[in-house]
Amino acid sequence: MPARQSPIPRKKAPARRRKLSPDEIEEVFRRFQKANPEPKGELEYVNAFTLLVAVVLSAQATDAGVNKATRKLFAVADTPEKMVSLGVSGISGHIKTIGLYNAKAKNVFALSQLLIERHRGDVPRTREELQALPGVGRKTANVVLNIFFGEPTIAVDTHLFRLGNRIPIAPGKNPLDVELALAKVVPDWALLHAHHWLILHGRYVCKARVPECWRCLINDICRYEPKTPAPVPKGKIPPPRA
Image (cartoon, rainbow, N blue to C red):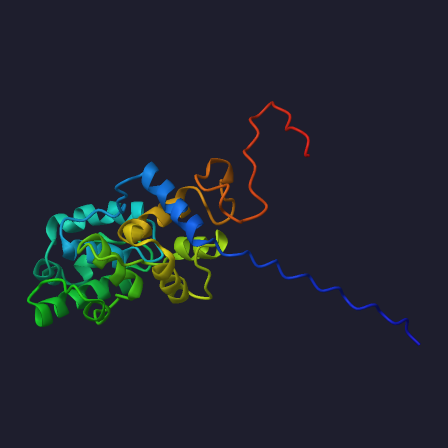
């Protein structure tokens, strides 16, 4: 008889981190506010329409890449009427450097048409009306409502989803879970800018693969472990581990 094989040991699931307390969450945003009192989005736009288009184009693309393409696009088409006059091929020609540009060009053309037909060329200021436009999901609608109309909405992208679960401020299984949880725990005074503080923190400090914990403003509050140590300069010997 063949020798009985021992069962393969199962990996233990990572311990679930305890969510930050209300006082800790308050302190997180106090520090963000002190470091950057008036955070701004990094997409370039000239009016509500161009902001909407820029956010639609930013899906699965970097803000820098979108800005590079839209500078020339918005110079010739900063209204729905002008965008429609370009046609799908004209829009596509301006955004070829952006991923999925063919599908995005069709969405931009179609949403421009609907803005003219349904809203007299104006960008609506309700989430429901925005989400009824081609290529506009909840995240895009929340960005437009927040940045242009000053609504205290929170747009959950990959950065906010990661931070909500990693720190954790508002853990959730999907972006909507995290958004609704954030809306409950973010202090009222911080709601307007919470989206920008978190996205900038996730983009430049609390990165996906290697979070730069050594320069994090909330290192002592965040429950993520193990913390990433500061990189050792070339030629220097790292200190021994305690």
